[in-house]
Image 1 (cartoon, rainbow, N blue to C red):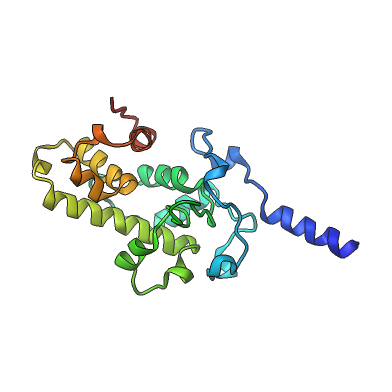
Image 2: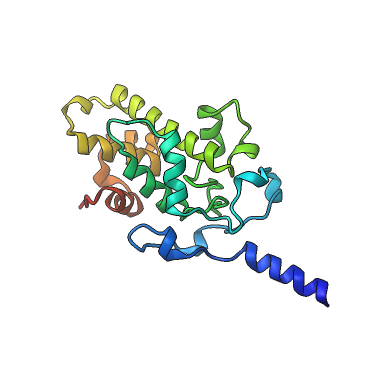
Length: 206
């Protein structure tokens, strides 16, 4: 009986929610049903280093900022504060966040094909739940999106800096292919994408 109770206690700790006051930005939280929260080590075939994982599976805003102080270098249209908000919006600072539908994983919710494109020297199953590798990959992907859109969007040079930010964020959330198919018109994007941009930048699309 004692062994059973001990196992239950360990599981409850692993799957426990974070302190939302210390972890959240502006007190917001994400719907729990979007993610498989608190995934144990080696489940779903993923492998992670014990040293890289907080006990609860969640990072605090302070820990996110510590990672970004090392990983983030000035990006013209995506400031560091946007990265913080993207990370919270994507994963609620949950290292093990895994989208049930898309299978995007980790703090900034990286898909396996995207990971292979951006961070091919680290296997997806070894890096997706490593906070440092995941954040590094997500930031690099945002840079790649900025570079790509600047080359293929014919109106890029006519956009304001804010409008360029919206384009990059829409591509990250909705997909650059979808954005291009709709002639780079964010007003045609799903409600989710418009709300995503509003949360991160404060701008509301009609």
